[in-house]
Image 1 (cartoon, chains in turn red, yellow):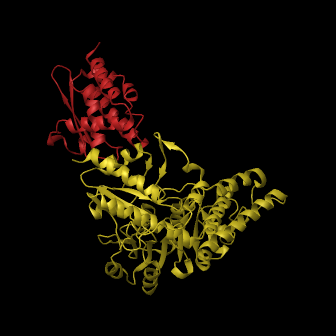
Image 2 (spheres, chains in turn red, green; image 1 turned 90 degrees about the vertical axis):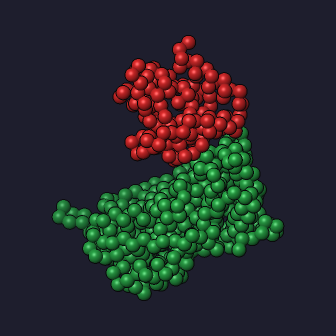
Image 3 (cartoon, one colour; image 1 turned 135 degrees about the vertical axis):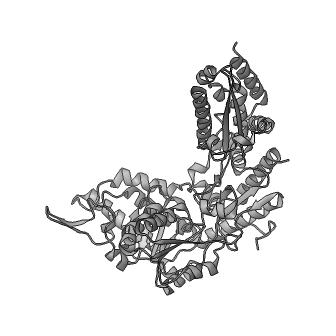
Length: 137
Length: 415
């Protein structure tokens, strides 16, 4: 089991334990609340992710060892929880692993399923931004 | 002042109305749907759906050209609908131009009347709470011809700043573009007065009635509007159809909007002459299904009695507003006296988007965001709002579900 697989398994356990839709939102909100603050240097237009109803920032920090650490934030709690899920799964992994990661677990944890179409677009924009960082660094 | 929640409920039989609207009877996320996004679009009653089905089952043919029976039937149905739609707002059929909706109607006026009559140095007046559809076309026209766009602010409660409006009018003003009812806040503007002021300044007035048609009485002649625009889908009719109501002499003088079939008089290799209005502005095969559906929707609304419908909606809105406000920690956005249909609000400490997502999860459909009124949201200093919009089939019970769902969201998001 790779590091990524283990992280995904943890996330799946967390959401499975929650049960119904409102409880899954509780989990997302908690994850959002626990997300470390975004360093202010990253809170600018360059790191803003378009395509979300709320404001979202995701920023890359490249390690000398080929890893990519991600920072993120949103002014909406549920969206912030979504950022937290992506960071929990991907941040700190090798760039190649991030670029190639299978994100099918988002459907399995019911995150994608319970998100409105506009939110899904937001999620897609976040994922694309992270993949772009992984491909670029 | 808002009605108290303990005032007696209206006697209007909203349950019977509700029973005739199929889309309301379904579950969302395991909960019975409570549809409160009527400002975006209304659900369709059975008679409207049946009318559209009947059109395709019995009458479908291209209009205005065939000598055969079906074509004549379709033409008759369309022209009877034109009479009906015009009568609903108090104008003659020849003053009714069918468009794809409010947006196209505004664009039609900006592209035809606007391009002919607005010159460099002229001024156009719009309002801060305008829907983008009644803002951007004028901004683009002003940019294209070198005119100045003047934007009249609204007060904190959402009512128009009348002094600022008066000050914006001058002999340079060519047109004022007003909203009858604000889609974001529900403010009912005193359009008859505002149009009279525009006329006194020598300007024409266009009134956007998209949010008004189903919620307040509309009499285009009494308002005095030179142009009045509306969409069917916000008034229980189909999507993709609406109308421009315009003074006959203006339509006569305006150049065509698009070119093609149905709008021509005679075409030769050398030149083309155009049909008389309203055909002049209806190039191509029209949306006949939508047109007859629109007339059916207005028939349905009149059949319920517009006065009774509006009184019922007022009761539900006042009840919902008072109950929501009583939760505490709620900021009502837009509190102008006499406002209709719209309950726009923020939960203190929560992003409107989060509130909307949690309401959806509980089966309550609302809209969140800027409501196509970004200048207004910026002006009010809010990132957007949660907007519940009520229609004839909504009840106090719907308001109770909304308020309980907001309370639940508030508990999860705040504190």
